[in-house]
Image (cartoon, rainbow, N blue to C red; front, side, top):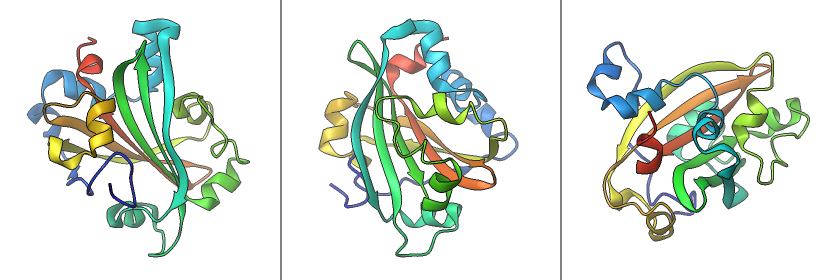
Length: 187
């Protein structure tokens, strides 16, 4: 297990969102990657109240190098890291990793540090000034995942994901979302 993630053994290789990228992705992956609203809301539109959050990891640590750069954080600056699984009746839908700098938590009046089993999307999409600054895409082979993630997500094949830099009151947060087969099966 990485000391920076319970889900990942190493930092993924992310690709910038450039013109034409959407057309290189499988249709189901593009649909989720370019979803502009809350993924939780979309999942609940299909599964209803069966969609739940299982907290896998919630602690202060130093993010991966590229995460620190995207968030403009110093090398030894700790950020709150939250890794969760969204599931419906135990069927894994999305594995997510959120990086929250202290300044972002402060400006959000600590709402983001005390989510419990509430989905992050439920909270951040309620902020009227939420900005989506940029996002990237990655394809992770099973070797990139920890043994625990392989079991939680029932991962047996490469998994697509996106990471998005959002800002609340101009303070950034980073959300990584990895789409499990059951999510990609939803039209």
